Image (cartoon, rainbow, N blue to C red):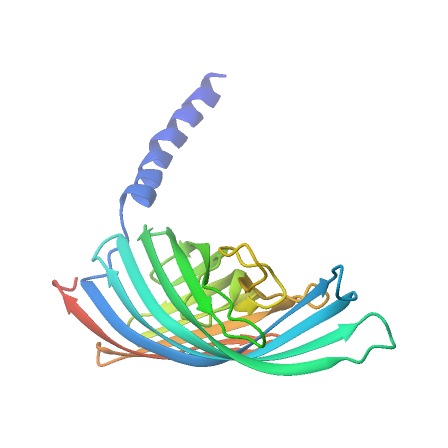
Amino acid sequence: MKSTNIAARRLLVLGFPALLNLFCGGLDRGRSTLTVSGSGGYAQARTKRTLSGCEDPDHDLLQKEDQYGGAVKLRYEARTGWNAEVEGGAVHARIYERTEHWDSALKASEHGEEYALGVFGAALGYDWKHFGFSHGFQVVTGDVSGRHQTYGLDARIVPRMSFRAGRLDLAWAEWGLFPAEGALDGRTAFVGAGYVNPDLGLRMRGGLVLLGRTMLDLGAHSLINAGDGMEVAQGRDRENPGVGVYLGGELLLQDRWLLGVNVVGARLPGVQLTLGYRFGWGVDG
């Protein structure tokens, strides 16, 4: 019993400083930086909804979109620990909508429509040497003029949260919900890994993703208006969920210019390109 108590005390004495260093010592980045970047890209979105009513026969509404969008982001990273970012952007989409009636005597109908979304997000995080997090939100608003009526303004607010664990100055595991990096991110959930090489200015990430891009759901009721309208929704086909992979890379040139690419390889693909400039101050080392 005495030897057990001694071993427990030694573990406490040796382990407490390690835990204190993990959670009380922020990651030292060498200097504080502010990165201004712009991104743009293309993505596809899809949703399927079954509709029924007193006047209309039961039918399936299939909605597929081509989305083009861009965003501007400001990201601040303190020399140790804290980081924060704000982002604003827009998405332009072309809807390809198809109505399939359950009654075989009725013919399917198709038509196209266009709309735009506004996107705004913010997040705050902190990085220790072996663990980091970032929490925030994203607001998406939209308005669309349709066939027989003008749909009103609607909005969707989703949380943003991501976590990293490992050696954050070298390699780590990452996971989270709605990371919302750029207007066309589309990841509702993800799990993966990352790697950084400061000497080369290289940063890479990749993993598995559950896809659900933000879109206007013309078959829904508005969140704001009481009547029939549209809803800013996470487009996801329940019969064929958007499970795939994501890959991302950043290259820092001359310690200033930032080039980046993010690709989602799923049934509904998407790609975003990023160009940025990094301001830095403080003394390295």
